[in-house]
Amino acid sequence: MSASSRARSVLGAPPWPSTIPRPAPERRTGLTYEHDWSRRYPPRLARAMVLDGITRPLTKIIAPTTVRGSEILDHLELPVILAANHASHADTPILLAALPPAIRHHCVVAAASDYFFDRT
Image 1 (cartoon, helix red, strand yellow):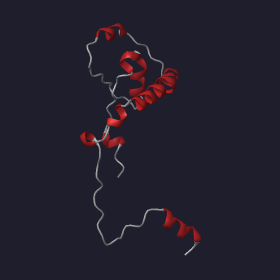
Image 2 (cartoon, rainbow, N blue to C red):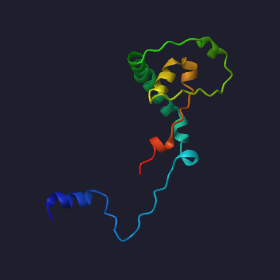
Image 3 (cartoon, rainbow, N blue to C red):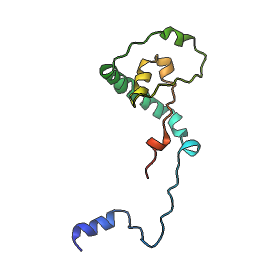
Image 4 (cartoon, one colour):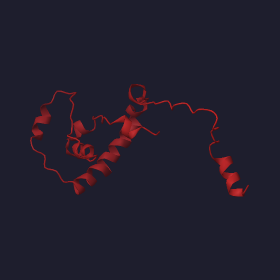
């Protein structure tokens, strides 16, 4: 056994015995996903800094948009649901970049858990 294979076996996860069936992984998405931490002030501040400092300027450079009718947003009675047509994964940053700050910083983005959280 070489030194590199010994190091891999010590540092890596132990091998699963081939005679024992592997249990299905526990999925922690959907209603059971722990998300309370994401509503606290530090993650919200970090999200706002990334959104306003990186995502929004980059989106405006890569995909400049024309916003019409934004005065309607001033009279919305919150909460509301804003839905994109989902032409691409760029829909979310483009929609967030087009919203005024009062609405943008209170958005909760819904995403497909099977696409973003499925690690099997």
